[in-house]
Length: 81
Image (cartoon, rainbow, N blue to C red; front, side, top):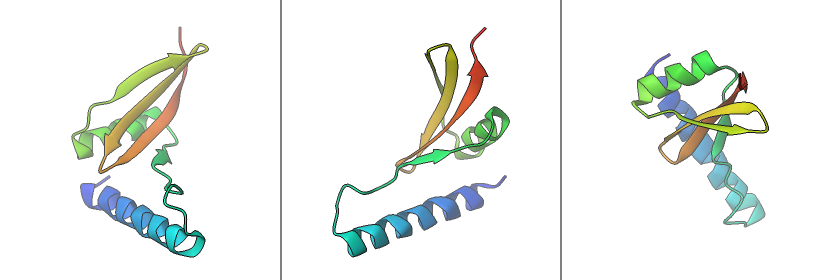
């Protein structure tokens, strides 16, 4: 995974957000969460973006997330032991 790839994804998301706003006229329709399929990919995203991973727990399930350029990348990492 490369930082350029993540930046391209964020740029595409921002373009999509602008088009939704233009079409629907809503300022609050921005999607700022990117679901990542696995904890290992989440670690790669955090490493290449130099962003700290936050870990939280809810109902016995661990969630991992990091923020980069206004977007939150997150994943469910599994059950808490």
